[in-house]
Length: 226
Image (cartoon, rainbow, N blue to C red; front, side, top):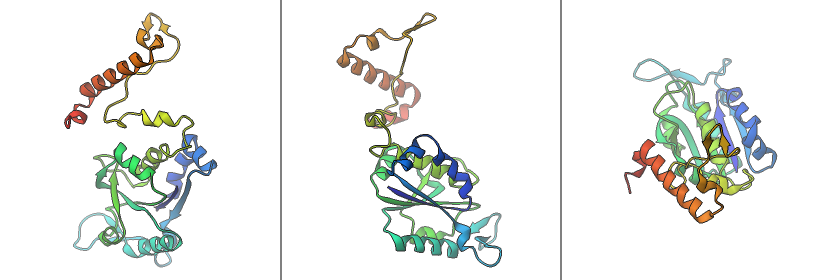
């Protein structure tokens, strides 16, 4: 997968890709991530990328011209399966969206700032608008990093045990069950006996029951369709 990220602050988004799973996925050649500074196409001697909004009101808007030029340059080199805009009024990111995007080959992510980007860019180019929650950040970079992490870890070969990602919370519409590791008895706090039994069928049944119980208690909204 290739990911191109358009940003005003490339230094803000680089660090998540320089450690842990994301770093290893790049080193293995599984994912190719590129940051593009929008100010490359900024106007005049100040490299201006934003201006006042028509109709008045507080806050600046990222202009269409710099974005149009950068998007056009990237699209000349390859076709994109998705051009994503990170915005508070987008579709809330969930596991299903991450699964869908993980199957793509080339994606472009645009990080908004200020009051957002000129609506004409959204009308002309954007194929998917994503939010990471009902709150506003200073820019789309942190949201883009969250999206990339959620997507990249699903790509085959990124995680050594590929079944691990398939048993995460939300993959089957439920939260993950409790997990335990050694020691089996710590200061009188014991691991459930069933997990030590070696009976894989009974263990899976226990995990399914606990996943449903945890979801019912913590996120009953996930069960509303049942």
